[in-house]
Image 1 (cartoon, rainbow, N blue to C red):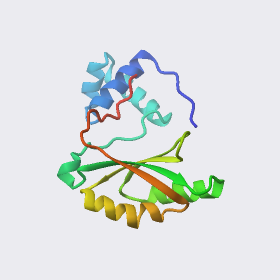
Image 2 (tube, one colour):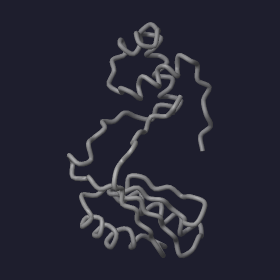
Image 3 (tube, rainbow, N blue to C red):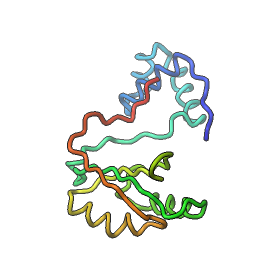
Length: 156
């Protein structure tokens, strides 16, 4: 697991601004962060090189692209051995409907976040993908009725 990087207040201002608008020009970013454009560009480059900034992406409306239903699934494996963990994780990485997959401590082994078109699509995903993954013994599904907050912005 990577260790944290020492961030100056200027770095934090840059990161907050980029989280709000990843398409902001360097000129505008520098102005918002009270830096010269060259100093701002150098700090952004350093933050990318250090792995603090891992990429940029567009945020899409799930319903507009046929992925309106958000599902969380608890997964219990039949065995908790290194090879089963590795095989399950590899299968989760390959499944396009799986947005996130987290190994957790507690009453189950993995928590999956998936997006599908509707409940029929989820039923197909469950039967054709999820329960076919290596080591799956049991699943518990939670369909989201209302999304209250959805953010990837980190409080920095």
